[in-house]
Amino acid sequence: MRVPAPRDLPALPYAHRLEPFTGDLEREEVYEWLHIDNRAFDDVDGGMTRFSESALSSVTFTGGRFRRARFDTVWMHNIRTVGSDLAETTWLDTECLSSLLAGTQLHGTQMRRAVFHHCKFDSVNLRAAQLANVTFVDCLLRDVDFAGATLTGVSFPGTTLDGVDLTKATLTRVDLSEGTALGITSGVAALKGATISTPQLLDLAPALAQHIGLTVKDA
Image (cartoon, rainbow, N blue to C red; front, side):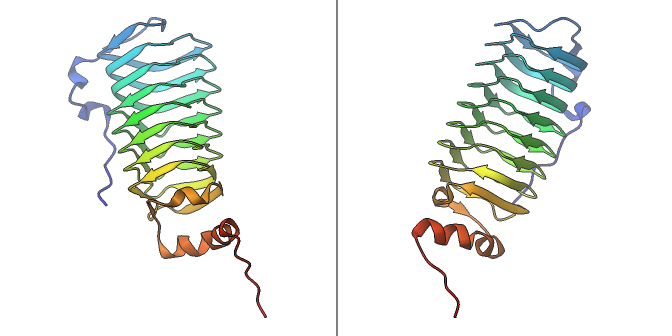
């Protein structure tokens, strides 16, 4: 498969239109053609805000509520979200590089044509999320909850899954074959509709046997 290459800020087609942002984020505001750089936001209420053709670099969000916010054609680099609520947000044509999402609420989120490069998802809630044409490149997904989520055209090249929950998830054209590890703790039945490699199949064999009630006994 063709893995999208990460882009630098100057390579963005709207880079020449970006202006520095020095204010505070506010609820239900529209932010367009802005570059938010080297900022820290604590417990901000940014619910229903919209970011369009903007860039965020070296930005930290601690806590805060961004429910139903929208990220439309947004480039992110070195972003940190710790304990933040981004439930029911929309991510469209968004690129995220070298970032950390820890203890972040993303349940009910919709992602379409989003790419994550060298990102770490740690204890992230993606329950009932809808992901379409999303790529995780060289990422770490640890204790990520995809229960009840819908994944369509999602791939994980070079990505490690560790403690991932797929209970009642729906997978369509999901390619896990280039992932470095498949640590799935629950929901192996949801792998129907996914592509995996032969070594991955061998790693998953115990969990699959347990799921179908197969007893493996050696003489």
